[in-house]
Image (cartoon, rainbow, N blue to C red; front, top):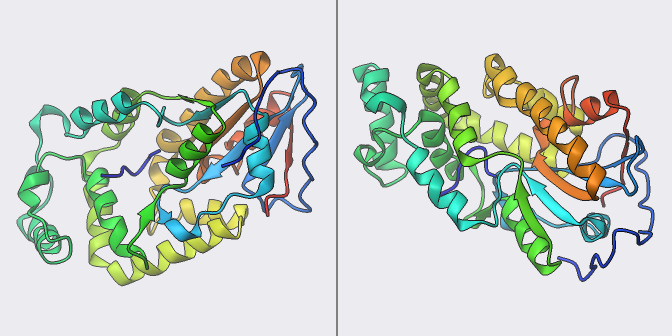
Length: 295
């Protein structure tokens, strides 16, 4: 089972923090998912990379530049420590709504019936199994139905494999308990509305998801930012909770982490661009953040 916010191949090793890595080529514009962070007292550059939480497996290909950036890093930081089975297993106990709430308590009888029929006909599953699950997590169960392939994975999962091949430790910027609290801070009614919107407009949802995947694969950061805050399918009213505050927290951590050692930081691509994105926030802290060619 995959979550909404989940949060991952090269022979390049990292033998010493004092080694001089080969400089990566600057991208001609901002259309790249890979960014170098340097200056402001750093002895070696760190890197930011934007991920996508669910893609067709064949669509995930890592560039030589990305492999080199990860190889030059001492450790890999992700939203969660995806290399620790205990983290993911612990998340299973945090999937339920607080105070014993059930989906039937939030939706009208007609709304609940529509979700129930969808789960039975499209997911071949009984909604009774998921009565207490947070609605945004229920929405994530619908996502594979929006995709044009049978083999679905996440960029994070593939990055974890790459990190293991490079013998890099994977660490998390957040705990599963914190991510669970993020879900709980968004009204369950708002979450249920998103679930209904996705189900009721499935063909439109498929087109939107396909467009967003294409924007990601083309590394069009401006378009990705626009789509991820689209009120038709995003959660524009909750961007402070989902993006802004988390980005500020991450930058606070990264200031200390990057000072000690160069790291490769992989978060959802929507966390990188914009006024409150990681790129802008790091620049405000005095770092040089430049786009790296990622082809």
